[in-house]
Amino acid sequence: MSKKQAKRSAPFAAVTHVGIVRALNEDSLLALPPLYAVADGLGGHQSGDVASQIAVNTLRDTAPKQLDPVALARAVQAANHAVIAGIKKGAGREGMGTTMTAAMIKDGKAVFAQVGDSRAYLLRNRSLSQVTEDHSVVAAMMRSGHLTAAEARSHPQRSVITRALGSDPNLNVDTYEIPVLRGDRLLICTDGLTSMIEDAQIEEILTGSLDPNRAAEQLIQAALDAGGNDNISVIVVDVTEAQGADAVAAYKQKKKPRSKLWLWAIFWAALVAGAFAGVYFATMHYIENRAYLSIGDSGIVYIHQGMPGTFLDFDLTFQTNPTTVEFDLLSPDAQATLNLEPQFQSKEEALAELQVMVDRSPLYRDNLPVVEALEAGEDDDVDASEADDAEQDTHAQGDNP
Ligand code: MN
Image (tube, rainbow, N blue to C red; front, side, top):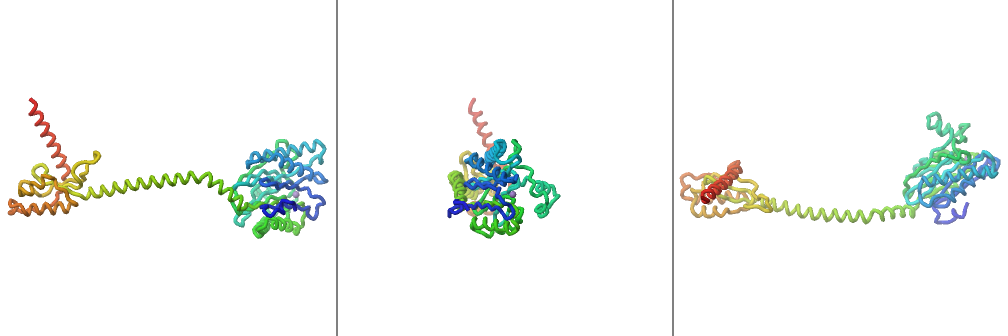
């Protein structure tokens, strides 16, 4: 166990074990938060460990400060060149190489750079999913549907990888980027774990152990119990309260002032609009329900819904109807009242008042009309005003000569 694991606050554990069968551990680990990596050295005979060590050292020196999958992939390519250069300088042996699964985890995000058959997994809500894709013969066969996961585990070519650091200067590095949430747990491991135990067992162990150190130890132990045929390396990283809080805080800092301003703006706009709408509709409702009486053309009394006159060029009269009442047959008192275009709270009130005028008019005594508003009075009203205008024009023309 490293010193870092011993730190109580450390949200990660990095453990490697030589296994039961091998004499040498050729895996190398790197755990310098937010940077984590495993490298599985290939070549045997005391050279795989050289390759994996060169690779993680170069990654440590060239990894970006910020989480950037492309920059992380460049660091893995630098590690690749360093391994190739190491072979040329006589470090290790010809044909040595290494896998590399590198990850950076910070502020609600995880980025990965991947070459070979080491893996990164995400445990979220007690469910394990593989983030990276293996560069191996069996993985390719599985992808094409020629092999099941169980068959791949026991396939004779299970350890043959199709991509590794240390041979091709133009190495292709796969990258992944995923959002991570508080409570998520990431596992980065070599095939010494995944070739020995199934994903279901990994999931069970990662779910069952709250402490990442305990989880890492249990994973190693499970691989050993299953035979320990290979070197086993595991890094368990918990997305902690602090990381999650940072991510949430950063998110809030970006969003909060803006969204609050928007909320206030919307609130006030709604309030003002609501107030205007309220006043408008209340006023319109009030005016619409009012009524007034006037004398139209041909001596008929008219009833209008609304108020006489206009407001800001809006006609405040909503409907005009002739009544059954003739102006000339009303008493002088009633005529005087009607000349003032009396206003009422409602159409019913206006008609009731007009009925009173009729009842009090002696000329109507013989043939008392039932006071009511007739249909389609609006046209008459328009005609009346046009007629008035025409009359005025005629007068003006008549006065001029
Ligand atoms: Mn291995």
